[in-house]
Length: 165
Figure 1 (cartoon, rainbow, N blue to C red):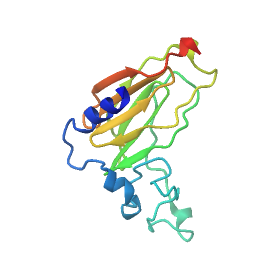
Figure 2: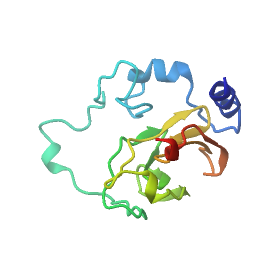
Figure 3: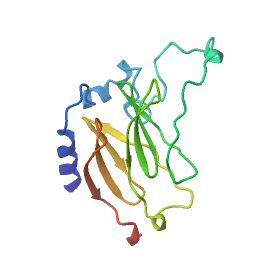
C-alpha cells in the first residue's frame, strides 16, 4: 500500500511538455526514436524501428560524444532510457539526464551508497520513467523519485533494509 501511494503521488507531480504515459509505453513501437522502458517496450523486442542506420552504412558511423560518469565504482552497466531526446542513465551512485544528441548534461542526481551494503563489483541496471518522474531503486534499498525536468528529489523511501539481510 505504501509503494502504491508513493507511485500515485509521483505520477502527478510536475509538468514536462511530453509525459511518459501508460499509453506511450504500451505503444512504444510507434515511437522508434525513444526507448521508454527496459527492452524498449512492453513487447520486449529489444531493437529500434529506426532505419537510418543499416548494414550498408553502419561502418560510416563516427563517435559523437562520450559521457564521463563521476562515479566511485569501476564499472557502469545499465540500460539507458531515451524520452523525447533526453537520455536517462547512471551508475550505482548517480542518475543523469543527458541531451541524446549533444551529450550535454541537463542534471545529475547523486545518492551516497554505504559500501558495507553492496557487492564488491556493484552496478545498476537502469531507471524507470513515468509521467514526469524518474524512478531509481538503489543498491542500498531506497526507491527514489526524481523530477525528470530538474533532477530534484521528489521522494526517497527505504523499501529494503540491507542490514537485515
